[in-house]
Image 1 (tube, rainbow, N blue to C red):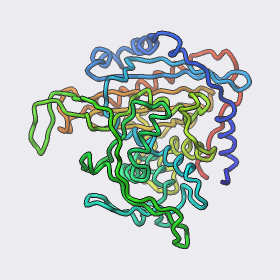
Image 2: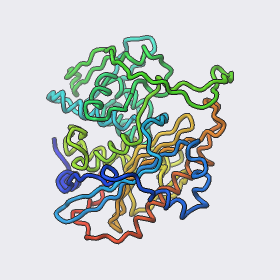
Image 3: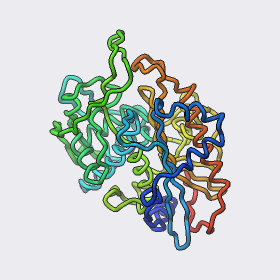
Image 4: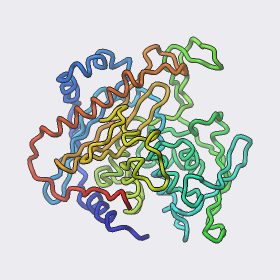
Length: 421
């Protein structure tokens, strides 16, 4: 597979110059750095600090220090991190599925089959839908590459569903569990109303070359995955069929993806050698670069698909640091991330890099914006509470990073990606 000069540079810097080191959070008890920093900006964080349990706030901040000979040291700081405190992961589950789609292609190892091969989705059930063409591509061809782009650029739900159908429940969950991501449960499509049994069934697919010849055919499949039993109920009521039901909303058969797993997977794409070997995805250097590029690309920079700047502004799906702002981004900063928002939950897992000051860090956070405890009423405080919190938190950590005195000058610092390619 041909790799562009730019991708060779970044892949080399990411894959060769990083060294896995045990984090401080693994060695020591959790510290209070994050709480101390937030209290220093009390007007911005007082409401959250006073209601942190009700808002289900969790934060992970990882300091990154590049030393001599390319070694990289990671130091973790956490705030209320708790794998047992469930939050609905929303669109963040799209990230591991996008990555696994590339890994699956590599595992299949079929000549002519790659992320740019035409992928035709058929149907084998009443509620399944087919895809024979994709109007958002220049030539109308649906491909795994294009689905991944749409997931990372604008968090497209249908694109996720197609990759979910390509991989199937068993592959997604068994693979992630074997890699050490043991708390993940990705067991349903998004934005379509299907029951548990219907989500176990995935569509048949054909991958074809330019002449129409079938390169690979995936039959319809039924998952026999045994879910880990959960009794996950939240809030005090929910709407069903326009009627209020005065009992907690049951998330037991909803997707699950903890903050520490989201944080770790984002880290693994930017620093593969910074995570334990079993937790690294089996990808090519080109795959890593493809993911990095589109995780950090702005919608207007994309040539295919093409997005208008009215509905998809520069800071779209960049909750941390920008919140709900629709202003131009700071040119020296790039954010490689994946967000989620649903049922009042806001989540963002991100890697920040400032090329001008040579600072970088990882930051992930979740907050629940549902003060009345009622689900499905469309009365979530995203704009009033959640997005301002995300913006303030990202800017708080960024400002803190600028005050730090580096012990050593960063060597092998990553170069900016050329987004015009």
